[in-house]
Length: 116
Length: 110
Image (tube, rainbow over all chains, first blue to last red; front, side, top):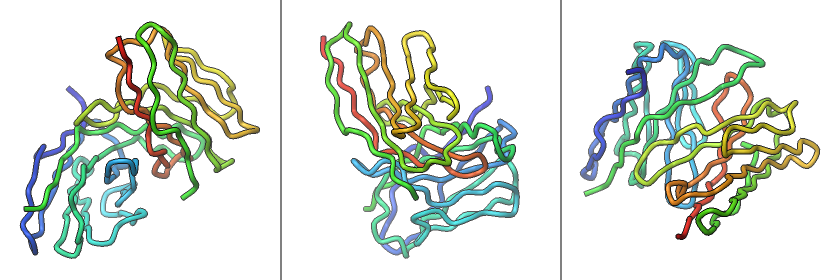
């Protein structure tokens, strides 16, 4: 089946540790996104990538890093510099065909990150 | 980014209609979206509307867009308990990430 797979579903981070969240898509989409969701805050954009080997900071990029070495994969690393990492992290992808086109984003099931 | 505003909570009785409202500020938005999130899950696209339309209907869902007032609404007819979820309004221009509201929690009571 086509879709977006996020892993793991639950993740625990120790203080000072970097952790990496996986996001893989087999939809042949060019664009991929990472959002953070906190209760009552909605979704906030961390990073996005419109093409392989290129990515842009979103609204809350500090303390996070990403890579886009393959079209299918867009892993997110939560670094020790992120002091409040406990949240639900959502990965999304879209076709991203340029101007005047609908930019429907398809979401994975999410990773819940907690701090030990 | 620009603000997308939604009321945070709505409660309706099973069988009634639900209306979830959203206002946005970016007049250059080309598409507006409604997503549904069930507990512990990702977001599922429900429907979307192009900015030059004022209404779109899809089975039990009706989307109304007032572009002059930058107001979007989602009506769910014959609401069922399975419709209980968080509903997100989002605006976007192609090629860029979407700008989401904070979500409206819909509770359907028997």
